[in-house]
Image 1 (cartoon, protein in one colour):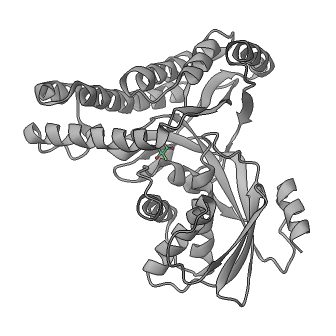
Image 2 (tube, protein in one colour):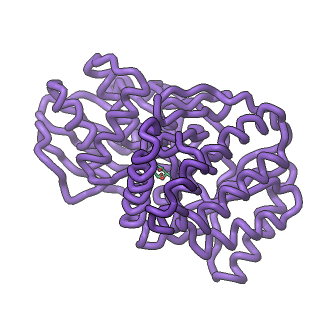
Amino acid sequence: MLEPLQRYIGTLADAPAPAEWPYVVRSPGRINLIGEHIDYTGGLVMPAAINHHIHFVVRPVEAPEWQLHAVDIEETFTLPLPITGRTEHLWVDYLAGIGVQFQDQGHFLPGLEIVFGGDLPRGSGMSSSAALEGGMAYLLNELLSVGLTRPELANLCRRSSNTFLGIPSGIMDQYASLNGRAEGPIVLNCHTLESEPVKNKLRGYGLMLVNCMVSHDLSDGAYGKRVAECNRALTAIQVKFPEVSYLSAATESQLDAVVATLDPTVTKRARYVIRENDRVRRAITALEAGASSEMGALLNETHRGLRDEYEVSCAELDFLQQTATEVDGVAGARMMGGGFGGCTINLLRLDRFAAFREQLTQRYQQQYGLTPEFYPVEIAAGTEMI
Ligand code: GAF
């Protein structure tokens, strides 16, 4: 029985799965145009759900367990219910953590068989983890008729990452996967959790992700360190300006007024956050005006900020970003996501995709002996039952 389902997932068909498998959820990955590393400071971010997905094909079973089949990695795991804690498999824990959130709210988890997989590359920065969490949360919300809204589901997923998995991430990835709009990117205010679509008037340009094919180990601890540094900056600013309730709401002059009390590294991080938040506002204006060169310049500025002030880039990403900006037809480029590896996001003319690919491949192979992967991405709708 599993084999046809695996084929079904392989084709990513929009048609419903066989009748005995009544539930199919499609959960997308995400990109982020701008507003990087500021979701956990209450900032503005501009993500979008994309046309790379994880599909979940699900049926109820009698036994009190979840029979999980991860098609892409060809692994199977049976999770007894109720869920009592973590397992030894991170992919299982992404799903189990969501179950725990529902359990903690008093819901009885049904026995399920879940087959899932898709075309969302793992570890490339398109947030397959958020797609896993969001898809599972969406599914349980429907099956148990809980009635949580999409922003509430995103919050639940973030809570699971933070508390069950111990990953101190913000809310952007899960929010984008669950709330994405096919018309274009959204602007999410991470303080209020309100979002709206951006009126993107850029014509003739598309987005291409380039995977640098490395992932430096530093990343886990470094992310938590950045979160802690931002909290320290906020605490110092609040001593003088108690009305500032989150770091992205501070101004550079408020930061300047407390600089003597701050470690220089913390000041650098906070300056990046405040400037990045401002760049998002300018990016909204640029997109609404259809101004590709302004938008591109903002992407390049963000990259410099992430490289020099926030220090979450790496040599490979810097090389890809710099090289991209030298290619004809590229408006701008930057590293995307948590950093230390993964993808760059590039804004370039649609008629230059092939040349871009060729030039970057050649230069990157020469420099690092690695072949980058390219993903032309299109913006898509958020999680849905099909
Ligand atoms: C990771 C996190 F999960 C997000 O919350 C966000 O902070 C991002 O890094 C950086 O913008 O993807």
